[in-house]
Length: 276
Image 1 (cartoon, one colour):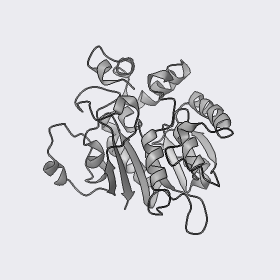
Image 2 (tube, rainbow, N blue to C red):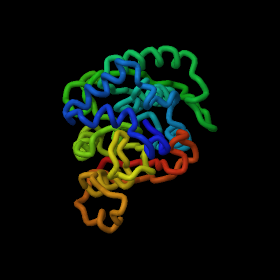
Image 3 (cartoon, helix red, strand yellow):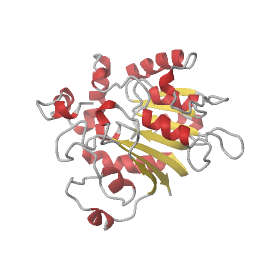
Image 4 (cartoon, one colour):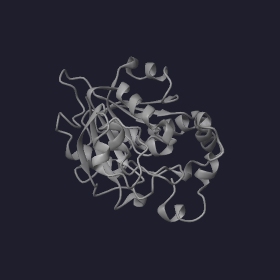
């Protein structure tokens, strides 16, 4: 994804790639970028430091990131738009059975290659200051599919719902008209009481500017807590958002992470929403 400096100048390559493409064809647009070797436009190269930290700091909290169920089973985590699978592998190393979803066959192949190497000899990027590798690492599986379409779930733990879903640059890559469908789909994929963890980015970008990435300041709260359509503007007051109908999630955590990717430092927010 582009940086603030890049977005203040000429159009980014991502914006140019999608601006004339019909919304229903955006999925193939992302696939073509993978197939032509352009994943460097958004690839971060390491798992999310903010996600690593919050998991390690709350891994013994059974209401948050404890990876095992009450009956001794293992919780299921999903990363839609997982790219090369950095976060998927990290979640597995911390005890979850982790699934990565990608619309691109090329991306799935890249992720499987990365996981094969990383699970054997995990690098330090998978851990924070606590650094607690699970005594029982979970499994990793990557699936090709369209997030909004049915069918791919059957390849994930027999189609059972997930206990945790992580979103970083997935929502900001979607056209704003798809935001309400994103929230509805997230709710349908999560168990009741399940967690939707969002590293909110880009928060520095005016939501009215073109994307991807699309500015998301105020969007997560609007979609998940109030049941809005996510088409907020930077000048919308909190009181106006509160007037909207109630959403399907309750926000449990909202913090500015101490560690995050370079381009989000100082503006990224980390939120954890609980499925009602």
